[in-house]
Length: 129
Image 1 (spheres, rainbow, N blue to C red):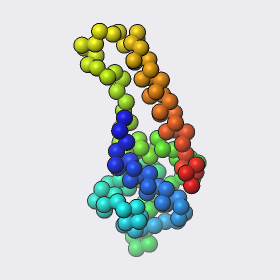
Image 2: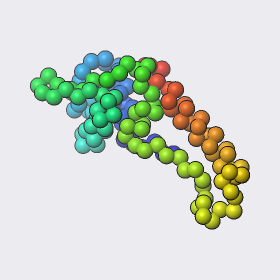
Image 3: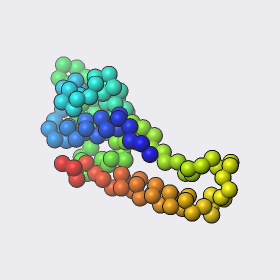
């Protein structure tokens, strides 16, 4: 699995907002996090849609976190901006000599996948603050 640049941006945005603990202008946050404006706005939109951020329009508008840091995990943020996918098999299943249920590689990869996803879900933002 590859964690995309957009996911890294999303994590930085959340961390920065948690550190300041107040509503901030989107452009200001993106500049502080060194995120290009166009890409950053896309990421913010995805985070708002996933209800991880609240967006307030208008002169006194901005963005703020929607939940406490103990209630948002890395999994929540990453899955808001990208599909979390770990291939089940490293080979073409059609041409594979192993039956997936008996494949020693598949069993190991399933365990690794489960551990990885569990770790993302257990890692809450308050642990990073």
